[in-house]
Length: 159
Image (cartoon, rainbow, N blue to C red; front, side, top):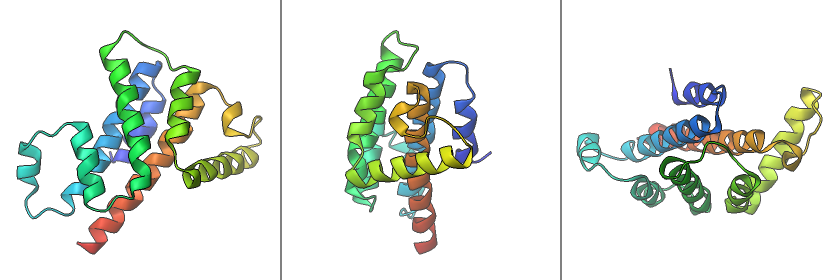
């Protein structure tokens, strides 16, 4: 099962806690894959046992566009809030913070994609902000995962 499938599987979970933690795991694995594509021997990278925030910084160092730093940090912060506090559901503030961490371009891409999918599936609402908080989290997560998947593919093609 590839990372994309694991991400989609996490959305089928019954609770928000599982969705947030599993999504974070998938995002971190994409980042690790990206970093590893630039290494001569990834064993030493794995042996370093770096924390998520350090992997984010390494990803940026090897070429991930800096506009993704804020959203990656926001995902990490949200995951920590769920993992270290007794929380089991997403709220409006959570998705607002994630949305605000997106670059202007990513916000536009998110709005366009959400509208296009909603129109194709004849869904109402069709604006990202009109969906419930869980679906907003999923929309943002899918977009971020797609960006990271593309970055990993491009990096492996260069190697």
